[in-house]
Structure formats: C-alpha cells, structure tokens
Amino acid sequence: MFRRALMLALALAAGAAQASSGSSRFCDRTQPLTASQQDKLLRFAAVVREELALTEGSAALISRSGLDLSRFHIRYSHAAVAWRGDSGGWTARQLYYACDEKRPRVFDQGLAGFAMGTDDPALGYVSIVRMPADAADALKRASLDTPRALHLVAARYSANAYPFSLLYQNCNQWVAEMIAAGWGGLADGDDLRERAQRWLRESRYAPEPVAVGSRLLMFAASFIPFLHLDDHPDADRDAMLLQVSLPAALEGFVRERIAGSERVEVCHDERQVVVHRGWTPVAEGCRPAEGDRVVSLE
Image (cartoon, rainbow, N blue to C red; front, side, top):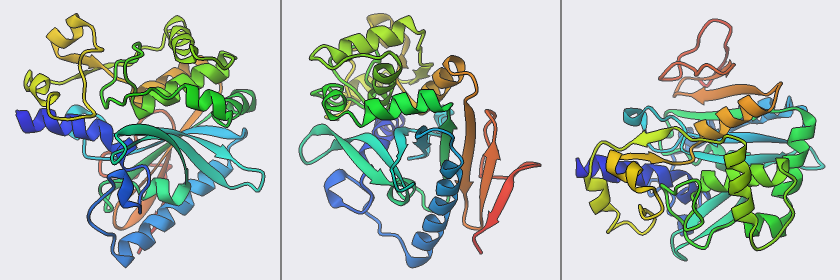
C-alpha cells in the first residue's frame, strides 16, 4: 500500500518533472529513446500539430499522459497552455518542478518535446481543448504576460496541492490560475494568486477529489519533497479524498464555462495514431472507434 500511495505522489508530479524531455536537469526519463521510438513519437507530434492548426483562436488547453495512473482512473497528469506564434508554430507554456533547484519554473516547450515527455514511449495520449477565438486570445495574452505569469508561480511546489491554498501549487493549478487571470481580466499584483483562486471559487471550479485509499500517504509525505498535506482541509485528509487540480478538472471547467469548446484526443501505440473527437474518451489502449481518424506508424 505504501508503494501505491508513493506512486500516486510521483505520478501527480510526473508531468511537471518531465516537462523538459531531453534535459537531465528536470528529472526526466533515465532511459533514452531508441531511434524507432523517437521516429514514432515525432510522427505522433506531427499529428498533434495538425490538430492544433485547426484551432480558431491563438491558444488551446493541451494535456499529456505521464505515468500509468489507470488504477486511479486518471489518464492525464500534466496540462499546459498551447499558444500559436506569429509564424503559425505552436508552443506549450507550462509549469515544471526544477528538481535540482527544488522550485517551480515556467517553461516554454515545442510540441515535439511536449509529446515526447510521456513516460511510456509505446503508448501515449494528448488531449486538446479548443475554444472560441475571444476566450483563446484572452488566455494567450495572460499566459504571455511575463509579470502576471511569474506572479502566479507559488514559491513552493506540491504535486498534490490543494486548489484553494496559497501555500503550494502544482503544474495544473498554475494553468487554472492562468485561466482565471485571462478570463477574469485580473490585473497584475502581488496578490494575484489570491484573486485568481477567489475567481475560480466564484466561477464554480471544483476538481473531483482523488481517492488515495491509504493512510500511508501521510507517511510518504515526510519523505517526498514535492508532496504536502498541510494545505488540505482536515476533513479531506481524514477521508483520504484529496482535491487536486488535474487536466480533467481544467477541461471540465472550460467545457462548462465556454460555449462552443471542442475536445480532441490524439493517442498512439506502437502501430498507429488515433484521432478521436468529442468529450467522451478514446478507448483504453488507444483503440479506434467508428469515425476516428487512424494514421499508420508502420
């Protein structure tokens, strides 16, 4: 049970810790990709790029699978704001945990690097939520406003950060607060995180609690520098139900708040890429359904 709790903590941190695939400074994978794996992931990233090119506005919400969280019914662990540059290229702006510095950082990454940050090169998922141009453009402006982006970074990182506390922050919570800054029209200031969280509460942002299932997570928190529990309400800790910002919560919030938002999943196994449109998830194992687009990798 300790291993199960420990894996949850590590998995929630995986998206941020692996944000800079290809650089050993950011706790990324220790096993190098083979030439074949790299080729397939680059082709997978090209399909993701094609789907983003269909976006009406200049930004989208993009999420990536990380460690295997299927036992917790979680597919995606890490979200970012994808934004389109003047040349038409796309970049993922995100928060990652710099392990050597023991602090969070804002990091811009190309789509290929973002897609290749998955823990399993044989099976990976990327989710894109497109939104109307006005909402997308407001999100891009806020994300690229460096003073606001940096004021939204907490001093301390926690993989399981409570969404309505200023003590810590995880990578997805930074995206949630960035959404608040953009759509709430929140001006810069030292209290920006507090105002962003207030806006999220008033806008009924409420991530589904993660059922931990083991009190040994409390013990694990003493040994993992990016895992904390003191920001969570006592009732949640007692019930072992931790409210944490995850990509699914961000996507649900966008869907409910922004009419006309659309979702597409792009996944791959070792044989093919599948493009699945709609708010229902693509089948486990990246199995295509009727109407899905399939791109061969063989």
